[in-house]
Every structure is written in C-alpha cells, then in structure tokens.
Amino acid sequence: MITVRFYVKKETVGFEMSGHSGYGEEGSDIICSAVSSCAYMAANTLTEILGLNPEIEVEDGYMKLILNDTEALRAQDLLDGFKLHINAMADEYPGYIVCKTRNI
Image 1 (tube, helix red, strand yellow):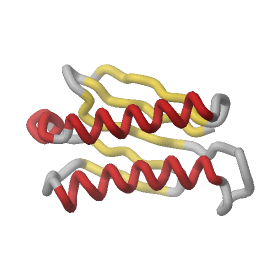
Image 2 (cartoon, rainbow, N blue to C red):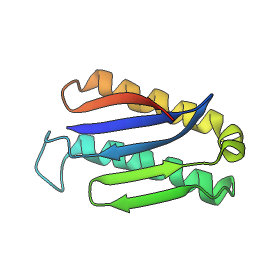
Image 3 (cartoon, rainbow, N blue to C red):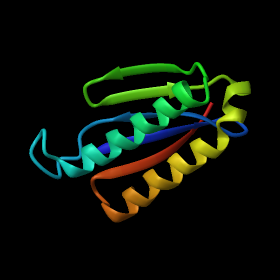
C-alpha cells in the first residue's frame, strides 16, 4: 500500500509518500506509476517553474518534500491541487493508497 502524508502547519507545507501499491507487477504497476508521476510533477513544478527550494528526499518507493513557511504560501495552489489529485486516486483505488494529514 502507498501511504501519503500531507504535512500541515496553518497551510500544507509538504508531503511524504512511501510504499508500493501492490496493484500490479513491479515495474508495470499503474497505481505506483500514477502516484510517482504526480509527485515528480509537483516537485519539478515547485523547483523548476516556481524557483522554490524545498527539502527533498527520494529513494525507491519513497519521496519527502517540505517547504519553508514562506515558500509554502507561494506554492499553496499547487500543493492543494496535488492533495486533491492524490485523494481522488485514493478514493478510486481504496486499499492501494491511503492519505493522512500530519500537523507539524
């Protein structure tokens, strides 16, 4: 199962994703691919388009992205869209993706 944690202060400041969905064979799992694609699109937009400097950790089956408070305010629309999209995927594929909120 993929677990997505949204880090929230007053607003969303980042996210952490871990695990594999187990929906299909490794390397051809459409849920893992969709979630990974969404996360990389968010990270690349934040860094390359908005010019922000989030703290990012990436490993196999894991990504964590955290923005400082000032940058999080600039990125709120993107983070809200990311959260909306991931939650919609979790609703579409229950048992494969779970979303949680962590207040920090």
